[in-house]
Image (cartoon, rainbow, N blue to C red; front, side, top):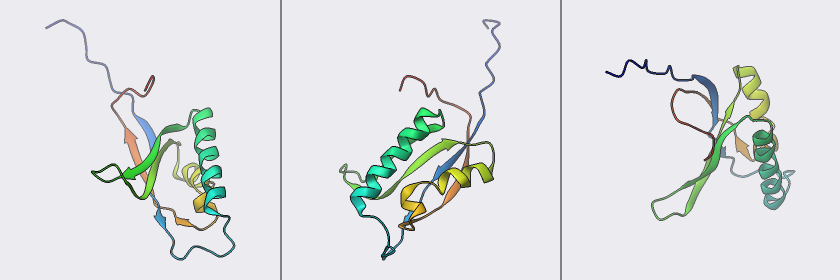
Length: 113
């Protein structure tokens, strides 16, 4: 044995936005192109604030997109997480239905990915 104690993993409260498409979408919703641009701005804003853990679309085995995707972000409480998640443009405009799931990160290095 080396005498070095194992490091305690950093436990970090995170939340997963795993949403589903509302069909048909609300008539008053912005265009898909506009929502996509706003969605990307939302993701970049989370990243700039140090809240983003990861985000991306779901893919099938052939690499084609299917469904929506997932966003993992940091928030201390459910209330804080709901406030953040409900600002996501697809959700805010009723085009997607929010499914918010708590997730505790206990392993993995996120820096330098």
